[in-house]
Amino acid sequence: SDKEKINLIAKLKQNDKDTVARVAKLEQKQSQDDEKSNFIVKLDDDTRENN
Image (cartoon, rainbow, N blue to C red; front, side):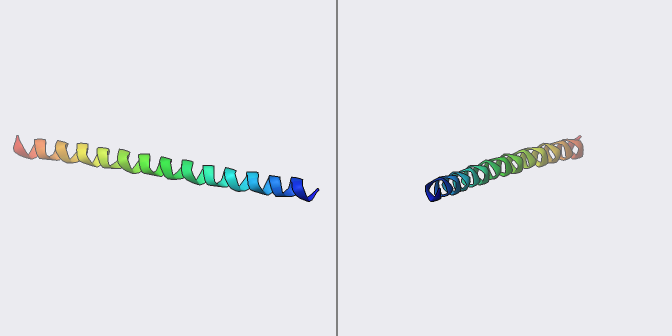
């Protein structure tokens, strides 16, 4: 029925939003991890230069 189709489409759209949100969260976490890694590498370099 049309009602079932509409419900299905609504569900798919909601899933899509959830997926987009999840991906955004993962990308944010990834960039934070990258920043941490870069920071650690920089600290390491600074330590080496000072010794």
